[in-house]
Image (cartoon, rainbow, N blue to C red; front, side, top):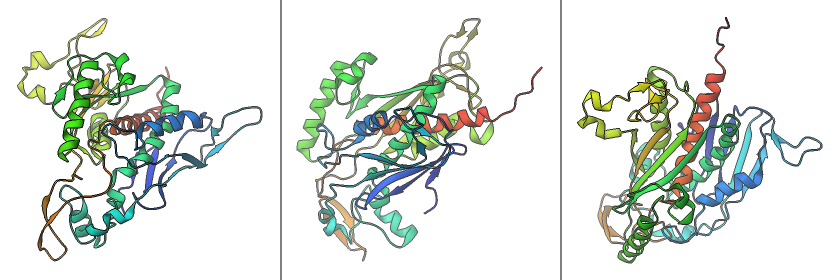
Amino acid sequence: MAGNTFGKAFRVTTWGESHGTGVGAVIDGCPPGIVLDPAVLQAEMDRRKPGQGGASSPRKEPDKLEILSGIFTPEGEDLPRTTGTPISLAVYNKDAHSKSYDNLRDIFRPGHGDISYLAKYGIRDHRGGGRASARETAARVAAGAVANQVLEQTGISVLAYTVALGGVKITERNFEEITGNRFFCPDAAAAAKMEERVIEVRKQGDTVGGIVEIVADCPAGLGEPVFDKLEAELAHGLMSIGAVKGVEIGAGFKVADMLGSENNDAITPEGFTGNNAGGILAGISNGNEIVVRVAVKPIPSISKKQQSVNLKNDAVTIQVGGRHDISAIPRIIPVCEAMVRLTLVDHLLRHMAIAFPQD
């Protein structure tokens, strides 16, 4: 299957299916000598794993991350370091209930990739969506955790949080509140309303979507002109997440209603006076905070009856069983961070490879 690799200098290939042996990633291009603390990497995996209540699927996966290659612990040190060779990461599936999907062998689920996968490959894994399942994102989070260890060497940081869920929107951004609720929401009052909304929708057998905002402290100069613009590759990485259906940078779609004099971020000796550009100009970071928002669709697996067709194109009515999230939020939060980290580390290494002339 083509399209399984992301990045040019820091290349990540993910593998695995929802109900297969497991999922994982192979990283090629990670610089040598970077300390990889297994506990730090595992902490990222724990943020994404299912079975944590709220809007999350009840599927119980420990998501224990195993590093199979690409590291070595030097004598006298407690933690392994990267060797510069390919890093192989694996997460084994422990709680897949494939029988829940037996009645879907010949039926296409609305909102899923069943019908498009079959059209492309002539074969599909009906068990939880196979390769198209959100289970694949565990591999992205693992790779993103490694990327973060590289970014920390240069002071680049990435933070994602929920700004809307099920129609409930935040009215303030108090980042101290993010770790105080299950939705990684910077507004405590909005988080409480989101909790109520999720309970309401769960009782209805339905699901909800939302909006995630990602911010990154990033130095000026990262990105490439024309086709490899930084915002283009950020959009590419984030849009490759199955539940994401829209991306906006900075002021986003609001710029359509602005005048040039309103949209331009004035420049003073102290820096920019605003950030409608979202930290990126002409495809290259300008030193301002990078700001990206993604629109997250409702989970398509719902227990309500839906109309569809089977392999014979006969009309059928289905109810999707199994264990599913009510919303991709909050588990998509670390996935969004991972894709931004992977994009930034790739451009960081590409930037470092440039030989600047010296006076």
